[in-house]
Structures are given as C-alpha cells and as structure tokens.
Image (tube, rainbow, N blue to C red; front, side, top):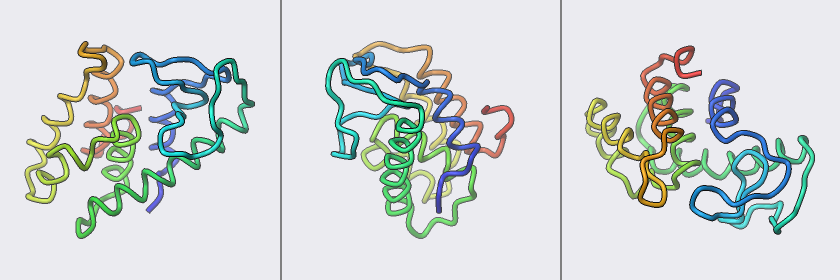
Length: 152
C-alpha cells in the first residue's frame, strides 16, 4: 500500500516546504517536507544547504517509501482502509513512534477509540505542547476515521 495523494497532502501541509535547511523545534536539521538525516535516506543535509522543489518532492517520496513499509510491517494482518493507512504513515513519519506506542496494539484489538485517544497525546516536542502538533494529531485522527475532507 502507498500513501494516497490526500495522505501526502496532509503531510506536506503540516510539514511545510523549506528549500533551505533549518533546525526544527527540537533542533534536528531539516529540509524540504520534513526530511532529516535520520534514517540515512538522501539527500544528506548540511547547514546552509538548499534544494529545489523537485528535490524536496523526491526526498519526501523516498521518506514515504520507508514509512509506508514500516506501517505495513507494523500493521501486518490488519485490513487497513486507505485513509487509515495514510493517517498512520503521517503519524509515523512525524514521530517515528508507531511501533513504540500502543496505537498499533489498540487498533489490532479493535479499540479504535482508545487508539485515537492515544494518538492525540503525541502533541509534545521538547517537553512542550505544540499547537501545530495538536492540530496535526487531530487531522490524523479525522483522516483515520474517514473524514478526509475535514482532515485536510
């Protein structure tokens, strides 16, 4: 399964497009649509680096391939709808925590309400609640629940 255009739009909208490298809210060197050096996926970012929009799009595609594979592996045996898959890819792309959270276990147990309540708790960075993360988790919840238009 691959991220749909709507799922990619959700990620792009929340990550924003930055053609020059910058340090995110927790100090991670970032470029494009949330691309980092974590995971060893090109391009490899250096301070002061710039890229084109096409390069940012390609970096996001490369990153999404990794997270799509992770979500597929973590959620093996669960028949996910496209919107559910997209929401989980967005969450894992942003946090890297799908496997270490209890969200996957709750979904597998059929406890969707519990899974979505847990997802909403992931709105902190650097020990602080961030409004952008709160909005993103709410949008991911809406997307997971099939309310794609409202999520976007």
